[in-house]
Image (cartoon, rainbow, N blue to C red; front, side, top):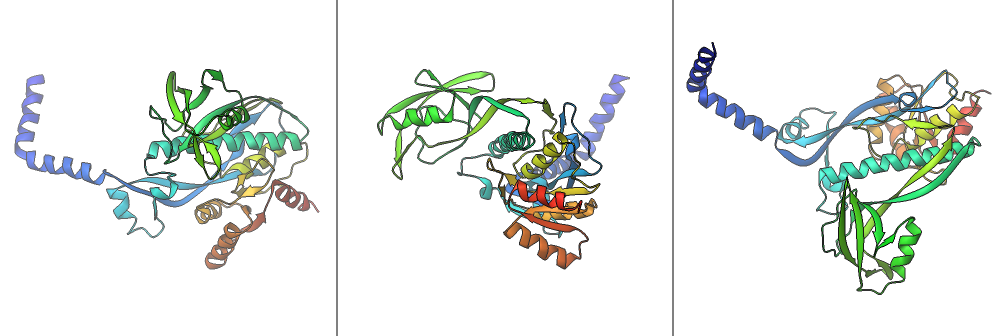
Length: 341
């Protein structure tokens, strides 16, 4: 039986080897990566499926994060973008801090951005609701390296700094003060946690714009305690900071007895800062289109260029959705409270 199968495929390959070789080459060529993303309309995701709070209150309506459908660029998607009007080409270089960053580096930074957005949302929502939020420890993650960085071993995006010159690092302030007290030109030994491995490298203290620095950019990720407990369930393909506003709103409304949704399907976008201010984001037109196609009732958007772009698109496309400009989490809460009146 095996010999018959073998002979069949042998004959098939012999008779069609040119076509098979062409097909293999064709697949390789169209799959070859190019330095672009393809952006197109996304949709909305109910945030009640992305976190759970112990004994939290439920809402009649829903809070939804708006997202962009993002495709990795290859020859096929690049060519298709010229044929499909709703597909837009975006150069990867626009997201790179320096030219050495890979797509994987950008993905790691975006995942860390999501984690920061979530912890900022938790802190603001819990404090506004009068609940316990306590920071226990800071973790410092490297998210970019500048062109003037000098190091003896490669430093990667996502590395966690654990010590400097043998001294344990517990806070960003501690690290910053240590560098400030060193002389320009001195070399410092960093211990980095990379996955399950420990990596050691030396970095040189530089003077850039009258500031002592090593050329490393960091994010602060907190270990914190809250009461009631909260768990997040974001998927691996979800990242970035643009859901900060909506996540904060959703958490806050789950912590308080009053239902602010008024039974509405609420979508929106915007980053959330530590002081509660809402920041602008990219790709807002794709997020508005996704909210409209998902029949959202209203769309929160950062005031300024993002809002102006949404209003222009709404008028052009005759969208049936209320677009609400906000500059802070308080603006969004006040608007929702006003709907009851």
